[in-house]
Length: 174
Image (cartoon, rainbow, N blue to C red; front, side, top):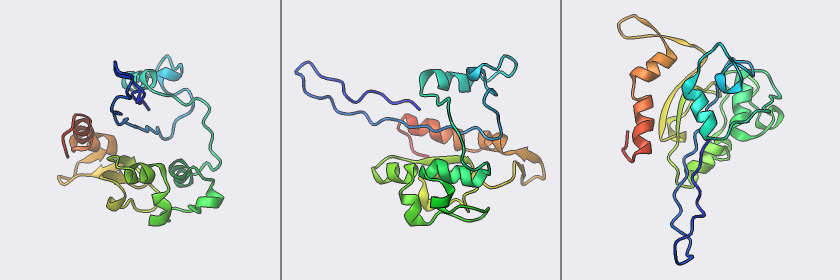
């Protein structure tokens, strides 16, 4: 995550207009602690992820209370243990009221534009929870309209997911 300072002062010591920060949360699935270059891996090359890690905040002491993906995702969203958020099986979503208390829900409620791209697995992702949504559940390979088998990361690159996020950063809508 990176955030520009919102405490800059003008020449007259008046607070400058706060620039809204950008918050990007990148969760890498199914990896161990040293799977990226920024964590010391000398074999796997991850230059873009390494660049984000160098420019933003990199959490190095993350732990999970439940080693099941949907429960961990719900914990990341809510900041709560599984015993509190109640997501204990696949297909069980957060209620709209519970989602409103997640970090994307709080940010969206404060006027931030929010998006989600990637594996969700906390029930079916609701389009009403995000301004932009390209989520999938449980599968990593998708069959395209022409019958071609495509990995979801390639599908995201082919669709507007990445260009939409880039456009939002420069003030364009999706």
